[in-house]
Amino acid sequence: MKKLLCVLLLGFMPWSAHAEAVLSCDDIEQLGESLTALGIAMDDENAEIGEGSSEDAALRDVVLALAEIAKAEDDADLANASIAMAEGWDNMDRDAFTDGLAEAVVKLAAISVNECGG
Image 1 (cartoon, rainbow, N blue to C red):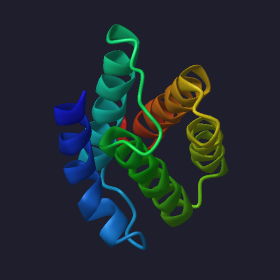
Image 2: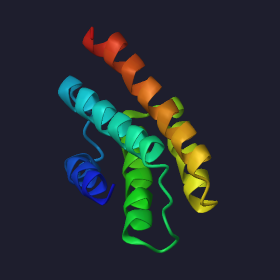
Image 3: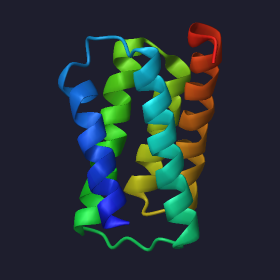
Image 4: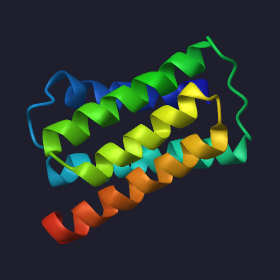
């Protein structure tokens, strides 16, 4: 799980550093795949992430980066997904976090279909 979170965060860094830029179709696809992989890892490993652990901090960073992307994209649905993830993270509720994560993935897939033809 730790390795996946590190890879995911490295993938988020270019987007969060330039939140004013709108995501390309490749970025949307890569982000959706990364978030899907995170959700699968959390389900497969029945992730128990201790409060204050490095994994906990990494998940917080994922939430913050997704919120920045939602703001840059001016997308209320993606923002709501990041809020749901944040609430799950704040409450140490893995199921709520992964539900918000699933919402983000669905929204990214819809963006991909509507804006990228994929």
